Length: 445
Image 1 (cartoon, rainbow, N blue to C red):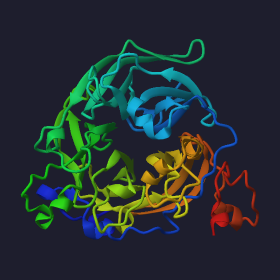
Image 2 (image 1 turned 90 degrees about the vertical axis):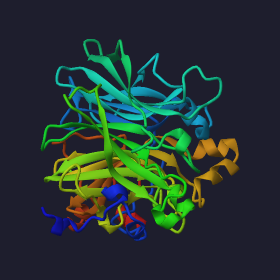
Image 3 (image 1 turned 45 degrees about the horizontal axis):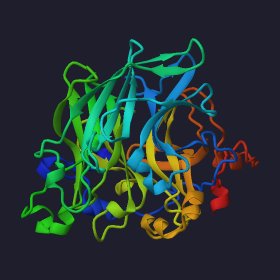
Image 4 (image 1 turned 60 degrees about the vertical axis):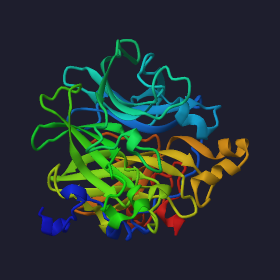
């Protein structure tokens, strides 16, 4: 596929690929990008904890790993009796496992001695020799009396999985600080203006074309005061999100050299969260999650999954669907899901996220705090949401259906018929349509 097919990308700061204000101004909800309404599942599989940002144990080639028949995921968690808005302050990584991709079990906290005051999102590698590596964000300085927001990228090695008597993930883990912002390519905390800076969400990726090993992460591009970026508009300059990258010269998961960003969004958006890549049909699909409130003034984005595509990893990324919008929540449930992560499945892509605040259509998520504590608890899902099905063709994408809460199939596992397929066959069956707590396409219209 050629650049003529994808379209022409636009240069960003320092000549890098950039998400421009013109592109982002095209963001709008369409039938192809709006997910179905989500309702709570009949049974909460893991009732003891709030669950949000989630990632799967993957092989080096990016496929979902299985260990003696088990698929494995990791999530940020907090006690389920905690007010949801406080969960980030005590976030702990837990492990979950399943032998069928539908029913999941809690294997408990991963670490006893992780770095930072709490842990934020990352990724996980099941290496060729059976070793488990976990990459995560160390948030805050361990030992500090007050809550702090310093962010470092950490790798933990030494993990292994034992299935002789059920399932057990164990260490001993060794934690290695891998990366800190350099202040030149990536903004440090003392350089940030306005919103909190970002240097987090490490995501392991081995390029199938070159065999090179990379670590993506969320960051910010430094924009010094007095800069002529964004026409010198100091307010727009505060919205300076980027997708950072580091390379491992030897393929060692714990040895990285920081490089220039893949993409930045100066003047567009301050947080390009949880960046990750799906390689498909010779193209590199770069996905990020972002919020309504992190878009720069005069841009109307949503809590949503956004994406870009290029012909090589360090290429000129073109926004998917012209604006970058891939999947968002319905207008009457704008915060029902967040923290989307795409992964390949046979001829399409699947998109996992967590079930956030439902039965709530406020203009901003801050309005949640105006509700009583009991109402905040009631409206928070705190679990994995339905898995979306995504059709991808070059630089265009389309949501074609949804699976149930916690349904994570492997390549080769048959998926239910989509609503369109059922209609074409002249029948309609809620179970076959994957209606596990969701409104199907026909019901949304």
